[in-house]
Image 1 (cartoon, rainbow, N blue to C red):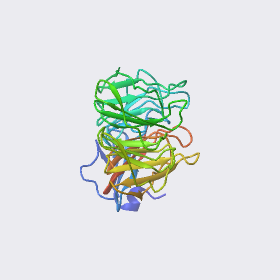
Image 2: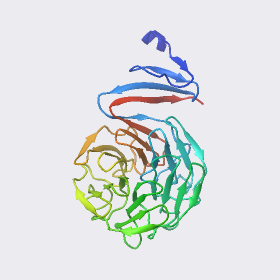
Image 3: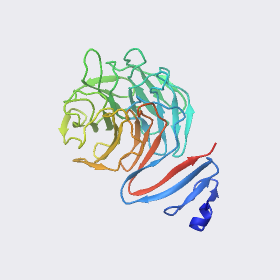
Image 4: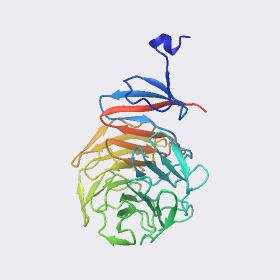
Length: 327
């Protein structure tokens, strides 16, 4: 069998990290992370494989927190039970940190960084909860609860200025309730026009975007201006159990629970219309998202079992992909 050097005329280089300026098609070994990596340039935005979560989980918070190189994963549903497990991403690998005080799945999460986040609402394995916790980069602290306990809701904002909207507050099914967080208390404000669950949200607590989900129609998109919601153009492919990231005028939607193994459907929002772009490499639903519509992060989810898979979205197209991991 021919070796890599015999085929390409060069050996795989060993770096104590990643090279500063890799060329298209370059493969190297990162001795710091014990990973082989590959650099590719894409004509358009595309998903590349990132480092796996330590704990497989689905039914996660639909918004996640942080950025592509500083993400935060918390809570979710493992193959065994709901979890409070928290992990931080550095752009290459995930590190386990202190757990949520209340283990739960299907809640809301907000935060611009992986050192300052908010986790609210969710399902504790028995019933919906209103619990709200703040993350300081080291530990979770319980703060003022949501006014309405619910799960399958969406979110926007930061740990001191967040927005919680929609969700499942029994006996109602498609909730439309919206609450805003000022760092101390939650206040009820104007409802969504379309009540929904298992959908995605992004933006800030004065300029948010809600899209998709199990609603009528299931591709419905709405914008929030700090006072009220306005219906705008729908997703091209509606669906539930989706995820997203970005801002009110530049968002990314990914994943879909329309099949048992999920879909990789990805769409980009420019403030007016949704455009279908390259799909996730790992089909899934109930994943988490973080980052922007040009540098996004998708992690966890189900297809149909909970997964550890992490993918990074890059536009314009250049990305480092982990092709195998040594142990």
